[in-house]
Image (tube, rainbow, N blue to C red; front, side):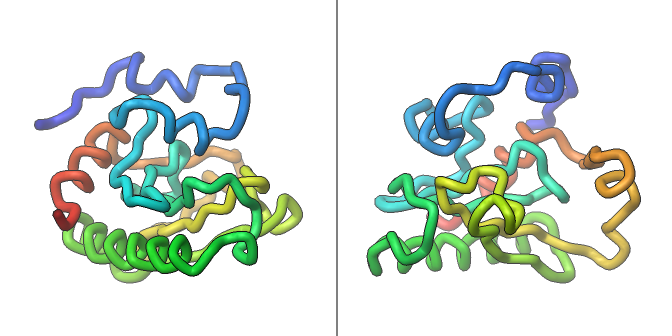
Length: 160
């Protein structure tokens, strides 16, 4: 199903109101869909689209536990997160055919974490020449695909 651009779908761009609480904890409590952008739920962690992606297919793996450091996670959670990262790479590769990936976590606000108190790992598909001047110069990102379409494509291709 092809998603057609609409002002409603791009609501997050126009919203100036900052949501209260943790964005990840808020998303966990919602029904999965366009409002929370959760691609896949596990028992201890989940995969969610980045609402402001660097490239199409940019996802994050997030533990359900609200912690800011890796040391605060148990082995079961880190194990499931690793499994979800592997599945994300396989799924994004199938759907988007990237030439590489950036995978990592920004721990602490001085390291660039936008949400410093809830650990999350970014999986960013990359292609030769995919960087441009928009992010550093204009603090804007250019994405070629609606988030609803990205969500549908990844959910459909995700291993069962």
